[in-house]
Length: 276
Image (spheres, rainbow, N blue to C red):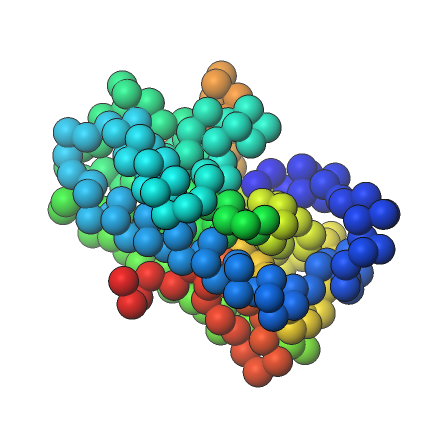
């Protein structure tokens, strides 16, 4: 999500008053967390199935059609479709495309591509959100290293999630993994809270900064943590479709994202795919 959009997106004062919040961040209760687990499991299931289906010759529109049908079959609605006018149920980005790629019939997936698929599901009032990067067939060693580093950066950030830690703990862990591998971090697009709304406070950044609030984590927060790493520099631009963001230097990009619950002793990855 665009960082400026997140910072400008705030629930009404009346809505805030009805819910348990810390500094404008909603804390979910046990019943709400149970529903979020179901929303997140739908997302995890669909991404798992998408990854199994991907093969050269398909189009990103093919994947979008499949993902939308599966989300609906599982009892949810696609979080992304129609969101601020976005036309797809997934964001599908190839190679140097960074985020918000519109699925298109003319966008053919080829062997050696690096494919990012991001999707969300809205189930009984709550959203789940997750992204994976898929190597299509045999990719270059450099691309494989970028993919592995982006995933390692995500899990390094997640390992810092527990009540009492801060957003800076997450950001620093992600940044350290990326820098150690000499990859750049996209700074214009960051993680976010997720729950009743697809994008909620706080902004969950992937780099150390003093320009954003360093929120202390509390049990019941639900965060979408999503580092985006580029093989080249961090700079991006948006294409004429006003959605698809690409690297300015045409280098490849990789992204991973999970919806994560903060607990008293650590975390729970709500969009975990490991058991599927």
